[in-house]
Amino acid sequence: MPSLNDKKILLGISGGIAAYKSALLLRELQRSGASVRVAMTQAAEAFVTPLTFQALCGERVYTQLLNADQEAAMNHIELARWADLVLVAPASADFMARLAHGMANDLLSTLCLASSAPIMLAPAMNQQMWLNQATQQNVLQLQQRGIGIWGPDDGLQACGEHGPGRMLEPDSLQRRVEAFFSPGPLHGIRLLITASPTREPIDPVRFIGNRSSGKMGFSLAGAFQQLGAEVCLISGPITLETPAGVERVDVETAVDMRQAVMDRIAECEIFIAVAAVADYRPVRVAGQKIKKSSDKLDLNLILNPDILAEVAGLDGRPFCVGFAAETEQLEIHAEAKRRAKGVDLIAANLVAAGRGGFETEENALLLLWEGGKVQFPLMNKSDLARQVAEQISQQYHEAVRNSEA
Image 1 (tube, helix red, strand yellow):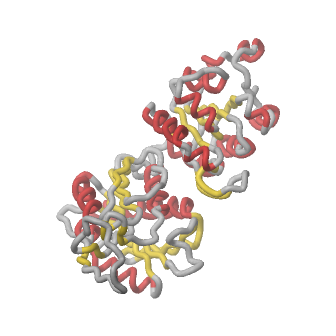
Image 2 (cartoon, one colour):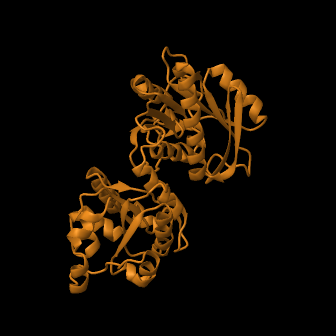
């Protein structure tokens, strides 16, 4: 049976070049068994015609709030009541601003206010518009009202700029809709994940850090949430958007991260240590900026806590997954680390040039566990995170079955 069989989805389309992708999204939803009806803003009609969607879905496309013909066929209140889910893709900055402030000056915004169905928005806009403080405040306000934000993605945009603001691809949105209606294999499982680098201060302006971008950890947090897990993400200092539905705790140093983990670990069934935690920190932190006064500066460093090993050594510990970045002999070093730390599974990658990893959009991973392994080739981190999360979910459930046998 198709995964979205008998589900009724109202697809809203606001103005933006990404509107052409909405036709592909409609097809993806239909192939999954969903009944889809379409509502468009006037701005959306400047990019793609209602006739396109009418031909694809075989239904009238709704475009006007006060239209005698459309009101006679199905007024906006009835259309709002019909939907099991309202998905606006693309959701422009203007549409999100109007919805955040409760405006109902066109059909689509009125439908969103009149519907009791869950509402999900797939933002699409110029990267600077997305990063603008006004847009971010609107996003926060929408999320606080229970409206989901799916995306945006990061990459090359139609305007030629590069950054966050691309609408998620139709197949990714279709999978999110499926996950929304399905409890997922990790439904009810509490998962704690660390991500991003830590910063170990030397003085008020300098610190010891590393090149981790945090993208893999953030992508994994979102992927686990889509599998149904209750995800808490403990992040070092990084400017990445928190995945929808994920709780976020911000820390700076390794000691801070350890404390945040230990405060929450007893409540979790799975622990994923993706963060690139600094191995050492200065013994003393200067209270003022260290002045350049000689040709050499000596720093005394002390070992930071090994968060993963500490969690893996707890009585009644959760299922533990570690990450390892290596520059050579990947499998040998990763397996040695897995055994030394006593974790259930380790994910390892080479950070040599051309192999992905730090500060790139792509990555490749080798997963190792007792008696098994799987190699994931170089791919986009979002796609990789989804596949890795599914594999970890399988290994977790197998470990639970073995413990109950």
